[in-house]
Each structure stands twice: as structure tokens, then as C-alpha cells.
Length: 431
Image 1 (cartoon, one colour):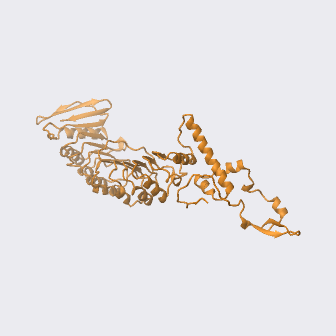
Image 2 (cartoon, one colour):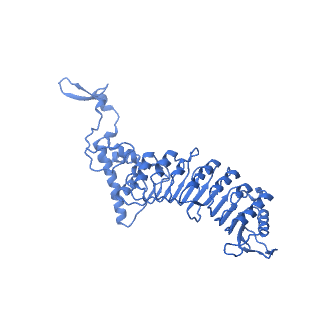
Image 3 (spheres, helix red, strand yellow):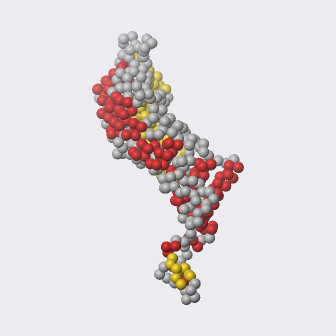
């Protein structure tokens, strides 16, 4: 007899079943003797005439109707239903065979469509042991990961949005693909326990896109492999496409961040090999300048920084970047309406000037703010002594602001200042 595994075990595709379970539970029947001494089976508490008038059960359905009913079940529950009796086992085996035949016909005609149902996904995963990409048939959470967790052994990309997740299934999937899985996308609502079970075995992961729970302890950050190149975090629900940035070692992109989440991310500063070199923070109205300052100070090897938050130009945040030797590109974007953006304070303007002077490799400064603030920063940079590059040449910073175009000017100290308009984006070269 075929051995059945528990609910968290792997699900084997139906084969020729040999179960001899009866179609009716014997506990619902009693035996009685008729006058002639013959045995008759009578329902408990009734007689033969009442039994004849009773309602039909699922066991009275013809094969085609039973097949239709069972095919409507959840895929995981349908495989569990094979244990009920021999007739159900045979019907479910035929449902799976139909799915296999349909796939074979499509492949013979040159079509290889993505699975549209959980059963199609299971059949494809079992027939393609070297499957490299895993994605749920639908965005709704209705495909149990246990169906395919043990069948995939060569995954390179996995998008687990749309799957029902459990700790054993996640661990099994991670162990089976520990040396091949490079890109992983996780759904919002995944728990710390699930994250830890999934991340611990992975050895070559390069991209992780996730939305950690609000009450996360941040322990999962210590389990990130050294191979990781991009970490994309959304604070509460993955409703935005990931931001694309160039990166060198580890690129961290955060949406809808909180102070607590940014503080947890500072643990990445202790990584031995792969360092955080690119940091982006977007759409995070609750983040304070103090939290920005702490996370910026934690990563001294940053080469690109994008701050798409209201406190991007605060002197508290910018002071943390002063003197960064590898900073090449800095984006300061205020997401508020132009009419709601206050004028820069003298200390904020001075912080921008000091940053430009002390970050010796800073070449590009993107500034999105009010026209008055952009002009103020431009004037301050034109008066800043940028000094010389390591090779002895005059340093140049490209200031890019939306819709700004103005004439160049020349200043003292023998240096040249110029600004040239380039379409909708002005480009100011300060030498």
C-alpha cells in the first residue's frame, strides 16, 4: 500500500492506486436479521422504506459528475481526498492524467503557456525537474507551496506572491535550491519565522524583494547571504514596482520606511565582504531626519544615495555624508507639492556646500525642490571652492534640477562657473 505523508509533507502525483477503502463508512450502518434470517444493511435508526426515500449522497453520482465535483476542490485538498476511498483515488488520478494530456497536446503544437491553475503548475513542476523559474498561476493566495516545494531543485528565480506559505514548505524549498536560487520575491505579510526559515539555507541569493512585518525584530537581516547584491524593501505592502539603480556591491532600496526599519538596516554595516554601496529611500513620510542621519552614517562606502523624502535636504541628514570618499551621485528629492516646500534655511544651504566640498568624488547632484531652493543651491555651489581632483584637475559637479535654465557666471579665485540648459532638465557644471 502506498505510504501517505502528513499535511506538511511532499505531495506525490497520483499513480495507479490500490487503496481498498470502502465507499461507505461502516460506523453509519448496523446489521439486523429479517424474519427469514437473512442479513440486511439498514441505516441507524431507520428502516428499508425510509432508506429508499433518503436523499442521494456524493457516492450516488456518476463518474463524470464525481470527477467534476472533485476537480473544483482546492488542489492540495484534492490530493488529500485520494485517501478517502478507491473510487475517489481513481477519479483524481484521471483528473491529473487529463491535465498531463492537455499539456502534452499544447507542447506538441508549439505552445508553452504559463500554468493557469495550481494543478497545471504541479504537473509542470514534476515533469520539468530542472525548472528555473517559479511563479504562482494567479496573484491571489490560493496555491499551496507544499505542492511544489519538494519538486523544484534548480530554481534561479522565485516569486512567492500568490502562494500559501508555511514554515516547513519554505524551508524545504530553500534547502532544495540553496545553491541555485538567485532572485527571490516575497509577498507582504510574511512572518519573521517564515523569513528566517527561508533565508538561512540560501547561499547564492543576489536579489531579495520583500515587505517585512511591521513588528519585525530585524533578525532576518543577519541571515542575508554575502552574495546579496540588491535588497528591495517595502514597508507595508508591495504595491510599487522596484526602483532600478546601478550598484556595485549591495544596493538597498526602501519604500514606506519607518525609523525602526531604518535602524534595523544598520546591522548590514557589519557585513564582512559585500558592503552597502547604494542606498535609496522613497515615499517615507514618517521618517525623521535623525533616522536618516543614523542610517547614512552606518554606511561609509556609499557611492550613490537617493533620498526621496521630505527631510532629504535637512542639515542633520546631510552632515552624515560629509567627507564620504566614494560618494559619486546624490539625489535629494522633496515629494511634497512645490507650494508646500519651505525655503531652505541657511544651515541647510551650508550643509549642501560643505558636502560638495568634502565629498571629493561627488560628480552628480540631483535636486528636486522649489525653483527658489534650486537657485539658492546653485548660487551656493558657484561660490564654493571645490578644489582639485586627485589627478590635479579642477573638480566639476553637475547640478541637475527640473526645468531650470539660467546663464552662466564667472567668479573670483581664477575659477570658472557655467551652467547650460539641456531640455527639461537643467545641467549646471560648477568648476
